[in-house]
Amino acid sequence: MLRRGLASLLSRLPSQCAVCRSWQDQPLCEACIQRFAQPQPRCRTCALPLTGGATQCGACVRHPPPLDACICAVDYAYPWVDCIARFKFRAQPGWAGTLAELLRHTPWVEPALERCTLVLPMPLSAGRLRQRGFNQALELARRLAPDKTDARLLLRIRDTAPQLDLSAAERRRNVRGAFALEPLRAGHVRGADAVLVDDVMTSGASLFAAAEVLREAGAGRLTALVLARTPAPVEQ
Image (cartoon, rainbow, N blue to C red; front, side, top):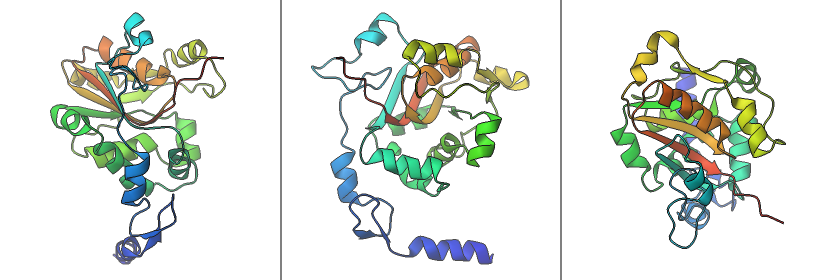
């Protein structure tokens, strides 16, 4: 009781916006959200920024991913890189509420959450979970749709090498066979309208690998909700 009361008191204390350092009662002020989180046209199946009125990027047209839709709040760029790092790597899970609200207010996210029957956070390996202490995708999912979130249906069955320095093709090979459904409950996916939740999407290899597992199990509509999308590399 004392701990809950202290947490409630601390949540009402003024703090500084993590971006502009103005005094607020939230980690991010409305002015910074308005400035740095403006919606922009994106590929409907991989969320890369688009120009010219297209709805899908060339890569997704040539090789359709196993997603019906992919919705992203922001680019993985300033100031969101630091905000996500605080949440993900610096043991600050309290950021989940603020970042989930940022994602929730992205166009088309609320309808996807209302329509779906399952919300599945991207799972971490056991070793990564022990190291970090929490699954950031699960923390986001619980705040987006607590009654629909299922953290035990989609499993990560093997660890993989870090994706950071791998090419797109190497990333796909790296996560092949990394995901599976809990065998006794795999039937829950058949015909379901499912939403996958993750914090950062780089090449999409992990999300697509998880989506393929759901497709093979007979899932209906599949939507990915991601907080941030790494922009495509500039070709030299």
